[in-house]
Amino acid sequence: QVQLVESGGGLVQAGGSLRLSCAVSGSIVSIAAMGWYRQAPGKQRELVAVFISGGSTNYADSVKGRFTISRDIAKNTVYLQMNSLKAEDTAVYYCNAIIGTVSAGARGYWGQGTQVTVSS
Image 1 (tube, one colour):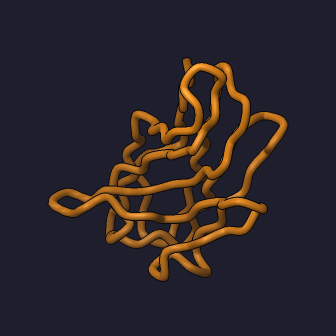
Image 2 (cartoon, one colour; image 1 turned 90 degrees about the vertical axis):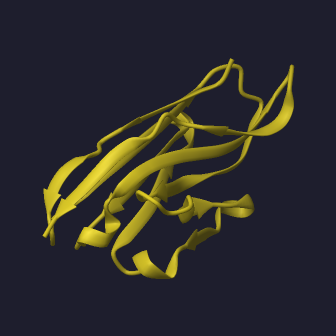
């Protein structure tokens, strides 16, 4: 069974920083992609930043220059460093990974979500 466990959310003032972590555990054969999405109240879930095949990264325009995604391949962990936070970054942040397992092949998995609240 695959699990994605997120940590690092919280309450921060505008202009501040937070670092999110997402650790993947379980019977993993491969990880094709791994990254972060967010969902604000009343809005659709949107991509924030993601590692795709070959190690390339993709960022939402709204976070470019402020957020940085990184990973520790040995630990199956992905991080999101969020700087210069704005009130509009307030959302539940979800970790997502495309993971291959022996039993289920490759499919997408979601973490439970971690709340990020930025006060203005």
